[in-house]
Image 1 (cartoon, rainbow, N blue to C red):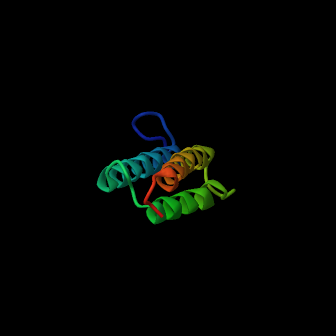
Image 2: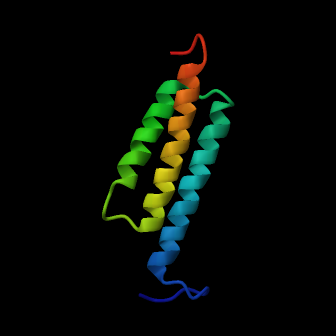
Length: 87
């Protein structure tokens, strides 16, 4: 693999770009949903992140990022389910 200008291999650069993209999409989803995102959306996002975190063919950084975000979305889901009048 060819190193990039920062001395990082191309694979590592792609891994870091994917982590940044996942974090950006997570932040965008959280902002779009407001302070009380839909419980179904929280559940689906958490499930997809959990599935990605469980893949052995993904780099550790990506798995760790997906696992941490899965926990954050699961926390949002628990908050939603604890809010009266929400299902």
